[in-house]
Structure formats: C-alpha cells, structure tokens
Length: 199
Length: 159
Image (cartoon, rainbow over all chains, first blue to last red; front, side, top):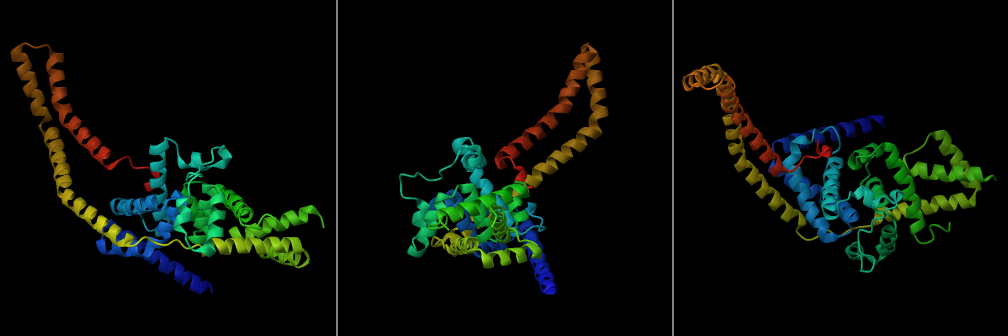
C-alpha cells in the first residue's frame, strides 16, 4: 500500500510539474485540456461560492484567462486544482469588494455578525434553479441554509476532496481556522438536513 | 453513561470524517457506538449528510468549455502580439540607462562649460544636469506604472 501511495503521489507531482512547465509556455493545447478536465469541478465550486449560475459562468471564463496570464506563477509544488480554486475564489472576492466595498470574508463570516445572503431570499434561488434533479432538492435546500463560508469548506473538503492544508492555501487562512470552519460546517450540515438535528 | 462520554463520541465522529484520528480513539469510538444507540444514530446521520453532499450534481452549461477555450486562445494571441512591443520597450530602457551612465561625465562637463559661458550660478547648471539625468528615469517609472495599472495590482495570493 505505501508503495502504491508513493507511486500515485509521484505521478501527481510529475503531473503538476508538467502543468507548471506548460503554463510557463502558455501552451494552448495544455490549457484546452485543463479547461476540459477541470470544467465541472471549477464550475460547481463557483456555483456554490457565488450562488448564481450566470455569474459562475462569467467567473469560470475569467478564471481561465487569469490562469493564462499568471500561469508562470504556478510552480507545480502544490496541486493545480488548489491553485485554480484560489484564483477563482479571489476573483469572486475582488468582485464582492468592488461591488460592496467589503471582503467576502467579512460578509460571509457569521462569527463577525455580518451574515451574507448571496441571493435574495424573496426570490427563487438561482442555486436552486441550477439543481433541478428532484432527488437533490432536499440536499440543495439544506445547503442553502448553511452560511457561505461553511458551505465553501464542506464543498472543498467533501466534493473537491482537498486536504486541510490545501484548503488553507486556497482560502488564505490558517489550518486551525479551516478545521474550526469544517467542524461548524459539518454541524450546520447535519442540522440543516431534514431529521439531522433530531437524531 | 456520563454526558462527557457522549460529547467525546460526537467529537470523535466529526473528527474521523474531517481529519482522521488515531487507532486508539477509533477503537474506543467503535466500542462506544456498539453500546450507544444515540451516538450511533448521530454517526449514521452524519454519514448520510456527507453522502448527500457528495451526491449533488450541478449541470454544466452547454459549450462552456468550448467558449472558454476560444476566449483563452484569443487572449493568448493578444499577449503574444504584445510581447515584442514590451521587449522593445525594455530594450530601449536598458540602452537609455547604459547610455546615460556612460555619457554622464561628458554631459556634466558640457553643463559646466555652458553654465560658465552663460555666467550662471553653479547650482543652476547643476539642477539642469540633475533634471537631464532624472528625466529618463522618470520616463521609465511612468512606463512601469502604466504597465502596472494595465495589469491591475497583483494580489499576494497569486504569488
């Protein structure tokens, strides 16, 4: 087992280095491949962060433009997806700042008593519209009850399967804060799902 | 059973799913869950919640990747076209610095000579020399600032 783990980690490190070299050269074929490869994960993450499909599409495209422009800054030492999500997240934060002159952190952190409602509660949620599958509606509705910063860490951990230290890199926060958000997020998720709080 | 034991069990249930835990704690938790229905239900509910979270699928908009690839290729072309201009600009700046450095003693003598002929006080032609020396540097600073404004401030997270 350790041999297999070593093999896969070496393989991933090699892949990251290959991506870094390709981004240095602004290799168009590599970028095409990366866009294909990460389209679903990036779009899903952006939908969760922005709560809006159209906005997520815009940020999706902007993220890849940034990847092209700043690709030389990726050194291949970390997972490419962690770097990609960090770019996407900061584009959203910049947009939030320009829109409301406040950071996403401040807006979303319920510990700072400034809970952010990414979507207007009185309107049908775009996030809800995105997920039309009936079997998923309950989960979606539950996710919407969770504050954005907790939803984000849950998505990064359990959908994107990032490690805690990688999440700290994406979110630009200490590992201890990531853990604290994860614990609270898990609690919130359990509480939000029907029957979760009762058991 | 004491409340503390249940609290510990709930804490370990979360820890196991979020960051893993040592085998001794895992063994303790397994033993506890076999005897405590409430905590076992909590563990099952937590697993259900996480499975549900993992199962959510978001439909991808049609042609998103294709449209993005097109935009990225266009931008790449733009950047490629701009590259020679940027190189030429830096080359000109470099040449200007070298020329300025090499010619400084001669220009100083020239200013001194012209100042003496015109009967100007020393500090006047010295200021003139200073300005002559500063203008290329100011030009470079202006170019760099314009470049920075064009690219936008580079945040720390990008590095």
